[in-house]
Amino acid sequence: MSAADVATAEPVRVRTRPPSPRFFVSELWLIFGRRRNWAGMAVLAAVPIIIAVAMRLSNDEGGGTFFGSITDNGMFVALAALSVELPLFLPLAVGAISGDAIAGEANLGTLRNLLTVPVHRTRLILTKYAAIVVFALAAVLLVLVVGTLIGLALFGGGPVTLLSGTQVSLWEGLFRVLLVALYMAVCLSALGAIGLFISTLTEQPIGATIAAMILTIVSQILGQIPQLDWLHPYLFTRYWLAFGDLLTDPIATSSVWPGLQLSAAYIAIFVAASWARFASRDVSS
Image 1 (cartoon, rainbow, N blue to C red):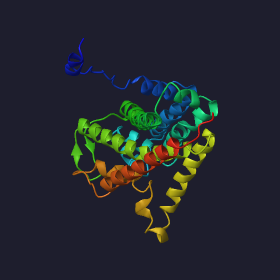
Image 2 (image 1 turned 180 degrees about the vertical axis):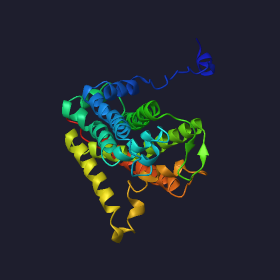
Image 3 (image 1 turned 180 degrees about the horizontal axis):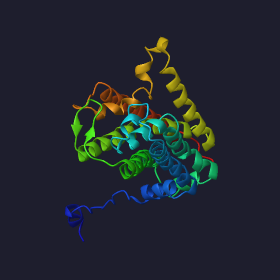
Image 4 (image 1 turned 45 degrees about the vertical axis):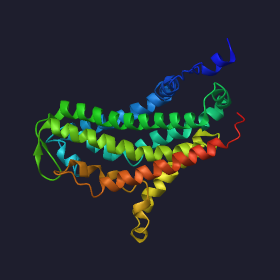
């Protein structure tokens, strides 16, 4: 072949493979395949069952917004369970998963091996966080689905009276519950981003989990102090209970929208901080 032929030859196109989903799937299997995580999810599922059975046996109309509506429509068992689990159980579950994301690998000595697969550090961080988001959504859906099923079985369904007093069909009510699940998944994903960042700072997953829970509890306590009202709009737990606004007609967005914006800000800041910390971290284990 002459030099002219070489010069005029078409360049060889190198096909690049799209990113394989195997790493993400293996991460999900790591989360949902562990017995300890199954035990934690069993606890989450047990709360709505206990609430429904207790309400059924006592024949009490309840004392709260959601509890008082359970006997009229079993769907409210799910919302009552969510309001009970939101201060502690759900944050603990998400904090445990996010705290274990990087610190757990370092503690087991598998982090260095994972990076030599090879897996780029940016991809690792994003995949770990994506798995945390999936778990947050799954945990919320677990509570709501179990609560809805046991509630409808024990108390029946029918038209749903929203918090604004408007009556909608059962299917419309279930759609509102789905919106609640999505909203709470976003809020808990903000906690997951915080837990992921803490996980990059230590090799002890239990310590990362405890730190995430301490921050959650402190945020909730600070939100109850009137003298710190200037700080309240910046607390990541500030709008967690705003999911009740999704059960009005029309849907009230005065708290839901700021809640989504605040959660998105926390997610962006702490995922970026996790990447910055992990990208420059000397991985020795």
